[in-house]
View 1 (cartoon, rainbow, N blue to C red):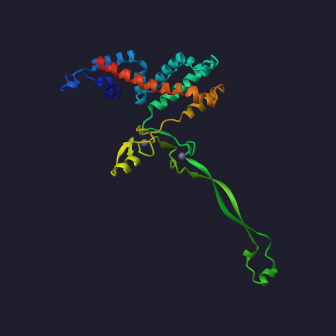
View 2: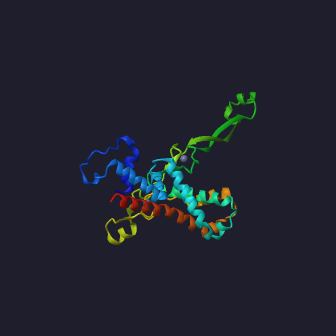
View 3: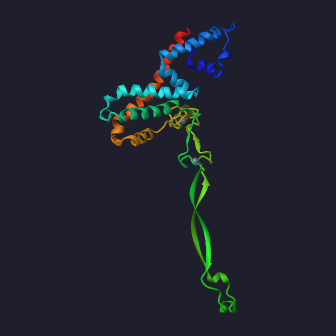
Length: 271
Ligand SMILES: [Zn+2]
Ligand SMILES: [Zn+2]
């Protein structure tokens, strides 16, 4: 049994997990066995198990727990990076928590995720300059104008007036969020590879170049950097790129590693 298989038990009420005999081999485990196995996995692989449940949206608690565990892990490792080692003792845990939060968002993102629309900053509408034509008359229409049959428009002064109006954001169509799915492969992770297609003369489907086959866009690490800058100005963008970003990337992979570890534990327990 793997992590994915446990999901249905989280959605089901515990009373619905019965110990009735199962008909197929994969159902050989009783409800009690499964609950016990999940408990053991939680104990042996706390970070990976919580991360997985948090990612699948089982509970916010699991999400918080996974972030907290990663932040603690980060604290034990961050002194390897000079820029992080030098951080003030009160600031350091805050920075680690921020990095862990972003690492979780990145780890749990999928092609089905949505993100805030950048175009309208999540407002759903944007302010646009709208030009309208206004006019006024230079003077009261003189009697002579009437005699000469001049039209009032001869005395009209037209001008363009700029007004700011709220218009529906065209990027998110007012929904405030946009899909994280890759724009090239629409979340499939595969796309027609132009180079190979030209070489071979037949359409060749390969891993999408834009997203590397993932199917979705990752969170730009500059967003994590900007969030860190809210806490401290001790890390320059240069330092971030050179030494802190690799550490942050390591934190994201840590969730994948821990999830795989939790999966392996569960498989072993239920073998
Ligand atoms: Zn928008
Ligand atoms: Zn793609």
